[in-house]
Amino acid sequence: MIALLLRDLKLAMRAGGGFGLGLAFFLIVTVLVPFGVGPESALLSRIAPGILWMGALLACLLSLDRIFALDWEDGSLDLLATSPLPLEAVATSKAVAHWLTTGLPLTLVSPVLGLLLNLPTSGYLWLVVSLGLGTPALSVIGTFGAALTVGLKRGGLLLSLLVLPLYVPTLIFGAEVARRGVEGLTLSAPLLLLAGISLAAVAVLPFVSALVLRVNLR
Image 1 (tube, rainbow, N blue to C red):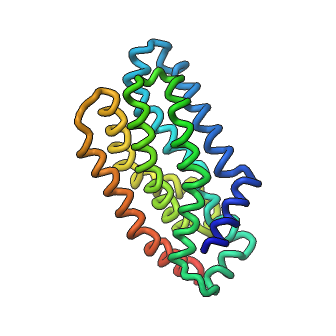
Image 2 (tube, rainbow, N blue to C red):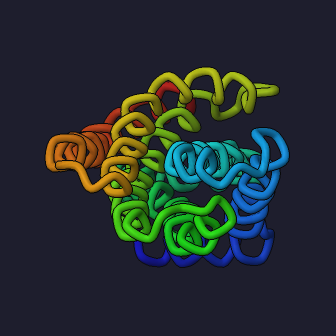
């Protein structure tokens, strides 16, 4: 499993798919927002948590179709399915690799991009905490969606349509944690719900993804 994880990390770094593309998209979204809503600093401060969370979500979505597609095209997925490594471990490894190359870099760079949106100082810590808790759920849910659409022609659009509704609870509670952190409000409820979503996704969805892969590979 570790060897598979290292292989996926090397491929992502060399191809620049998950790593560079996600970061570039996150930066572009953050830079373009002030052109759309205007330069008013008070308005940007108010909407910054939601914009940053939305940008991170879309950046994660951008690389989902690559999770299984390359392995499907070169036949590696068939070899993985017949290897001693369980498909549940394969799905978990793919989700971890996606998070390490997309979710973690987005989390780490978010404070810098918060400066562009005039995010108040009190919001930086909770923005990082919310993304650190929420992006694992985005990767695991995305891996499930990628397993559903593997092998389908033009599956990228269908993958987006399938995954976006599942991302809504994570987006709501993640942005709420960051917003309440900015305003100094109590945030234990959205924080616990966000952590609960991530834990539930990590505990359940790798098994569902493996089941879906077995069906698609028959």
